[in-house]
Image (cartoon, rainbow over all chains, first blue to last red; front, side, top):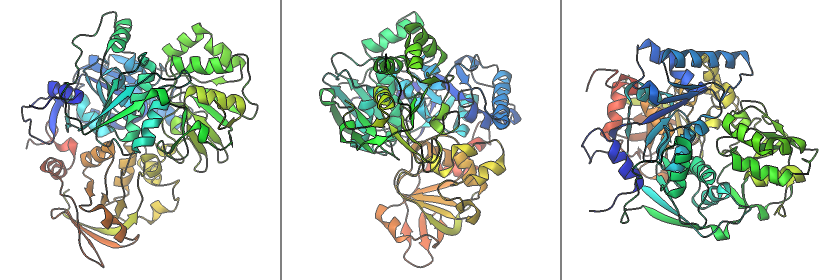
Length: 416
Length: 167
């Protein structure tokens, strides 16, 4: 009998029926994630039906899109969300604590081998520690919140082997941009992307989160790393106890295809407007003056990203033609960055800090782009108009590239 | 709710049409009027007002990629779009459409999409999985499986057990 992939094994362990031949099956979930915007959409329908949350201890809700709200309408949405979360008795209502995806991976509810659904596409980032985590719309989330179950197809799996040793100036962002260049925006559609870290030294957990986060930009359903000692160390430091029973794929697992990326040959990458798959090496860029640099979002905005930016700007100044907006992914990240001195280094260099939230990534909060803005960003989508004006332009890159471009005032082939 | 024959005009799009273009985040709201008005607003501010109930969106690969915000789906429903036919759909978008009873079909032969021109009158026969342009040969669509049809027939996920009558 053919071996099983990691997502096969995790889904099998969560199946509620024994109908292994069915195209769609009912599964139980271990945790559910929601934020102010998409959770507010279901509040009325949930309450009208007199539903109850299946397990309030397994739900994380946070306000991250409007945190704090900038308009009266958003304050109303925020208040509707908060009233709903409180009425439901949700245990982990995290008011103004950061971006939901970062809060998920900071929580013991996110475990290797777990099955997690969230009301936002970047829920997939839980795969960074080996969870089958995936985003859904509000209707699916309402159903899952009330029943603790959902319906799923068992996805085919693409195995991604990461080999070699990554150069110091590259990061997880460059890895996932490179994969997007190779596979395209639908190259992982409906697939489970199973990452095998065979590098030396192993990728940090922050780099793994950056990779998993953007697996959805390939169309992926899951983007999960095979759990290993890095995963175990992260979970133990977070939970106080090591994770139990790490699940690994069978050695004879059946993959739809295998993609190998040699990190030894990795170069800093950038996605040009208006697709995250429109990727070239930084060295292939034309000189492009920028007006905005953004370091933040669930895609980056973690401590290692802030450290890289602080390293680049220590003792230097952001170009006077550039507004450099920095948003730590969570309040915990912000506090750690304060202790490490990164906030001071970046502020002295001319960067400005906003509160931990989604910020301008979705074109909603402070830092959005005007018609003539050209932005280099650590966020995950540079779709046309997403960060603001339809004519604005966004380039996606790593934190280090964003910081170098902010200092230089431009993207340029000789940034490295 | 089941509507077996859907008739409307074609609105033609390319590959990788993302949900931020379908419904810009600025139109995220709990107010239906605002959600309805936002459809394709940045892409073409005049498009929404020209839509008629039953109209059919025709797309390429990866239709609806990007964000899970269900306001994109609500806006399509509030504008009473009849169906979407595309080469392929992004996963979350397809779930959202199915959960809300909006028919999404893929072409049996992807290249056929190029024969459909904006404004063509189309008739979609849901049970036959067939698209008939007013002028031209009928176009075969990939049949959807019984699971999807069960959700359509119920009128959406929130009419399925345990919320609706058991099957």
